[in-house]
Structure formats: structure tokens, C-alpha cells
View 1 (cartoon, rainbow, N blue to C red):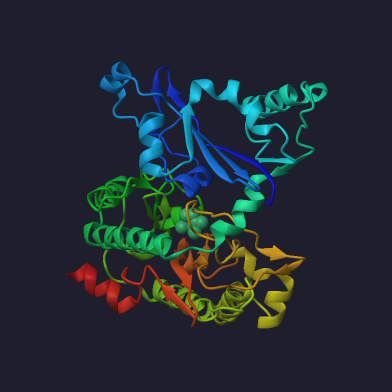
View 2 (spheres, rainbow, N blue to C red):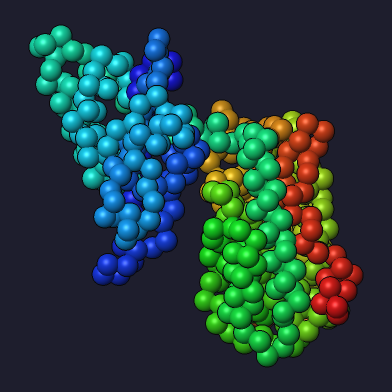
Length: 416
Ligand code: GLY
Ligand code: MN
Ligand code: MN
């Protein structure tokens, strides 16, 4: 945006029931630009000959601060965060038309919140109503998220360090969960171990609802009930990661409840691990987004044929899509402030090329539900292995390496 005004609000507080709220989480775009974590705040960026940043935020309020805690207020927000101007949020409707006057375009995000859309259009109409006084109204409305998505896709050193911190806490949590797992315990008890370690490590919250799925539950991709008892002889799939200072981690590990893989579990597990290694090896600058997925599918398809789960040649299994019966999701996604982070996967119809500073997950899996046309020994085995991988100048760095994933390392940790 060369000339114009961008308007970026943070997220609203949301009611959970009656007068209780969900834990507050700021808007990722707003936080990316400001670092400001209070609710009821709006950033206005003015681009052009005299660029400036304007924040609207809650006024200081001694009474409210006794109940709800500290708030900066415009004066301190300006001093601490370095905005050019700060005003009370209560004055926003009165001030906004002047900020929009004589600007060629307004850059905002419409379509997610009807009340917000109406408010923006209200300000625009106020400016349009002044045209006979010589004021020009913005002629173009463009999407600010599209602009910011590309910026968010490339992480700077500070963001990478934060993501490394999130990864460190989450790998410790997975190790704690492995140590705590035993036949007779419950999925929610293991979830509690993860949450304990997240918070103990300084993370503010999980980055998404933890999946703690024993036995057949591992074949339900978004299983979050986490209320079943764990049985000896089953695998446990845990997909869990914390959010640290706004940034997500996203890790999956799968391991035996009793600490020792059965022969059949091991066959499937080693296959997924090989698929993941092949996929991670593709992560480097210049590689296409889909290269890791293609590599994983190649390994999985061969393995599914070898295990007798798919019939035909490897090429036929890939061509026909038969492998999708056991591997129905994609191999990864961008990771950052959002667990499924901002950024396009294709450019001009082609998969985009990886660049240093991008962070993605690599998470192949294999999910074998009990059914007629599979060998019994594989029934209800669900495996996913997921790591967070940063693209570096020379290749990649696996941020979540510390969570054990070879059969030998997992069995050794669980024995200990
Ligand atoms: N935990 C969400 C995902 O793996 O994509
Ligand atoms: Mn993921
Ligand atoms: Mn995940």
C-alpha cells in the first residue's frame, strides 16, 4: 500500500456463558503489527508522504483496573509502544472520518464481522457526505489481510526465536506425556500433563485443542474428546503444541501405551517415520511447496503395497488415489501466529517455492480403521508424526527435534 489508510482491529472479547468470557486472545494481524495485547483496540496506519501510526485503545480507568487489571491508556501506550498518536477508543467514531478524508484507498478486512463492516462503511459514508466541502473519499477498498499474509509468511529472527521457545516447551510436554503414559490411565490425565508443562514453561495457552487419542481414537483426525481409558497393546497419538507470546508450535507423536511397539505397530510406525524423513529432506529454499507431500506419498504408497493394505503398483496406488483411504490429509501447513498460518500455497497457479524464514509442519500419517479388507493385525492403528520445520538459507532446521520419535528413543524414554 503506497498511499492510503489501513485499519486493523484486534479481536473482541467473547462471552462463553452468561457473564463469563473465553480466555482473551488478540487478533493475530493486529498483534503482528503492534505487540499490543489488550482488547478493544484498533490500529490505523497512514501511508503516503507523512506516514504515521495511530492506536485507539481503552482509556485509563482506576475503578475498572481494580476489577480487571492494568490497562495502558493512550498516553502510556504511545510512550511504551512507539505509536505516533494514541486516542481513547471511545473517540474512534468521531476521529475516523478525518483520518479517511482525502485518502485514495482504505485497506481493511471485511466479511468476518458484520458489525465491524457496518462501522467501517459508516465512517466511509461520513466522508462521502463531505464531498461538497472539497473532501475526497477513498475510491478503493482493499483487503489488508492479503497484504499482511505475505509479510507474516517470512519470519524474522525475533519470530523464529519465539517459535523455537514454543517448540522447546512443547517438546518437553511431549516427553512428560510419554513418561506419564501407562495402561489404565486416561486420555484426559495425559492431556493434563501436557497443559501442566505448557504453563510451567511460560506458554500462555495451547495453540489449539490438544488431541490425545488412544487406540482406535487415533483414526479420528480431529478427536478432542480425550475421555477414554488407555489400554495396554494400543498406541497413543498426541497432537499438541503450546502458544508462546502469540506463536504456535504443533507436534504429533505416536507411541505404545505400554512402552513397547508390537510388530504390527512397529511396521506402520517405521513406514510413517520414513515418509516423514523423506518429506523433511525436501524442505529447502527453492523447493516447491508440494515437494514434501509428494515425497511422503511416494514412501507411504510403497509401504501400503508392501504391507498388503493397497493392491497394484506404487504408481497405480498414487494415480488412483487408493492410498487416501489410509492417508487422507496433506503433509503440512504454514505455522506462525496461527497454527494454520497465513500465506498462500500457490502463486499464479503453481505451488510456491520455499524461502528462508518460512516455517511449516511436516506431518504424514497412516490411519487403518478396523474393516473387512485389511489384515486384522493392522486394525485400529493410527500413526501421525509431526514436526515444525524452518526453512534456512542452506536447507532447514527442525525446531521440534527434541521430542523423541525413533522406536529406540521412544522405548528407552518410556522404560526410564
Ligand atoms: N494440530 C493441527 C494440525 O496438525 O494441523
Ligand atoms: Mn499441523
Ligand atoms: Mn498437529
